Image 1 (cartoon, rainbow, N blue to C red):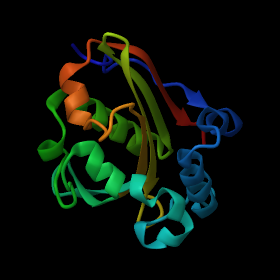
Image 2 (image 1 turned 90 degrees about the horizontal axis):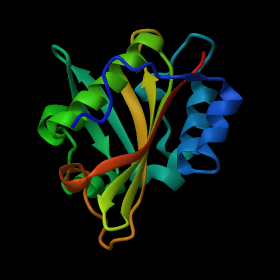
Image 3 (image 1 turned 90 degrees about the vertical axis):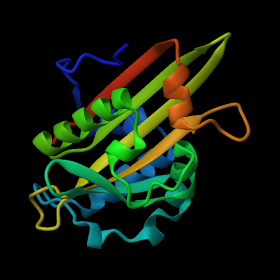
Length: 189
């Protein structure tokens, strides 16, 4: 079953609405930091990222970089991100890390971020059966070494899982019965 039809439009939210959707989460910290680095149409490059400014959410951060062709490779992944994938994904491509269904949705996200040069938010509540739910949120912010052409993405994940240790994303993707809610939005720029 596909999570979302590829042609479904993603709403563009104003900055106040997009920011409100994040609440007081670590994702809001990332958005605020990224916006501070943006200057009009100028996008920050990965060299402008100061990890010290994101210290509270370092475990949840990841950075993807464009590679030859149409590929994406994880340049770095925090400890929580590695836990989410149940492996160290640093240096690995999306194709190596994500199951096909999740990879299609991720690529759709990054293609939209490329086209619109703005931040993307995804929130999903998975139904795993017998009252078991898994909540997942992801914020993706584009980066551009030259200020214009997107060549990397700074993102963060947040999950709510009652199990210890937490289940991996692949484990959830393999066994979900339904998606209870799915919210996607881009920041209107």
